[in-house]
Length: 526
Image (cartoon, rainbow, N blue to C red; front, side, top):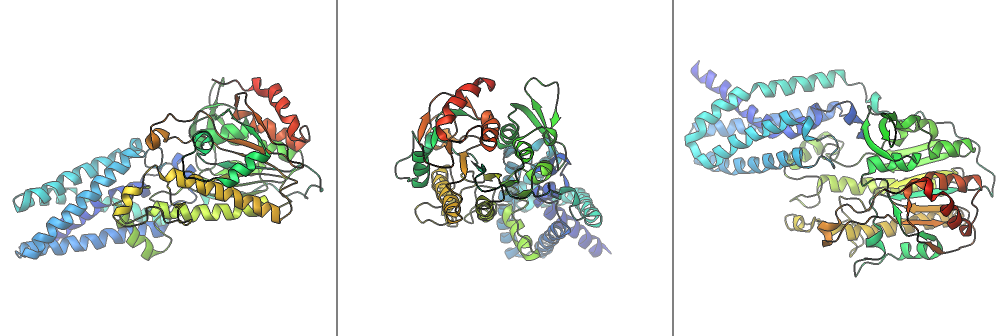
């Protein structure tokens, strides 16, 4: 009887410790609020919950074997205890750092929503640290504390089962339905492609371009376009900037209203209004009879603006939850690995999120090329995930192997990757141009290439101040008429500028400077 009680207690302690080790993962799956689903392509599936339960069971079984071996006085078990305890301590410290240190990059891992998980990990750190550094003399009190905390394992398991049973196929995060496609405009009608390179910096691309980096496609486009050299972005964050740019409204604050809408607070407004209900550049284009399209990442345009879009594709930003893979074996192996890395850095080479970001970028660009050359789409936004981190492209090799070496690669996973990402931005622009040229639509399409915000981490790169401006290159259809516009303007003018091009109010580059002079005062700068 006593042996059975000890065995039961050992199981409780083992699985309690295993459950604490995966608390960050539990927080990702179980603590999602309705507003946080805005940034998710799909909700966690039964496979996510099932594989996490299996990960806990597997680690718990290993810990149970270790406890039983320690009871038998195994020296090997003692050495394994110190080694595994040290690794567990590292993973717990990293999990805590992730929970409280990345509120702006992992949208649903905000500490204000994760206090319980974070405090639980603090407790686990104390317990494991005492085990590693205190030796066998602290085994008894730690063992008792783990048993006292074992109900947490039962709670998380019960919550997982409840999530699995009530899973509805992610209907809440389903895109569309989109607006009906119209007959294509006749040949000779205006057509506009608006390209946003996320976090593309004006200074590092032009005036302060680092030595050794070549941007031939950007330079070529600039030599053929009107370069508007002092364009102030509406915000330093994508989630504010894109609603502002599409509506022409200065946005003071945002908060998601579930997966399918974003509440925005415009300047001068008495409160928040839904982004979906505001007039926007896509609605303008639809009123003129154009088909409208979006290819994008990070923002669920296909849910929020579905009534104003005839074609739409979007991808969620890569994070630790959605970068584990799609099959059970991938999730089972990648989730424990994720405990030792974050979105940007990993001792195993490129982080899982970085690998996912590279794959997602390729998919976004491939779809963007299809839309850019589709004559039936009269106006499209291509919101692309470069040069935004995490960084994966290596300009020296021309492939996605930047900082990919295990162990040593972690020392290269830094802000220098932005320079390589600029080279990838240039390469992507070249792909868009060639795709449109091959389809015979480059010369007949007006192309506006810009950014939602400048490079936010410039001081960490070279100690210089962050740029106040974003690139803004406008190639009008027809004959090339390069030029420069040097008066400072707000990027909020973009919606009205695109409408002027689609309506025929502006038909050549030479008309743009005067048009900007006439309308710039409507969008005052701070």
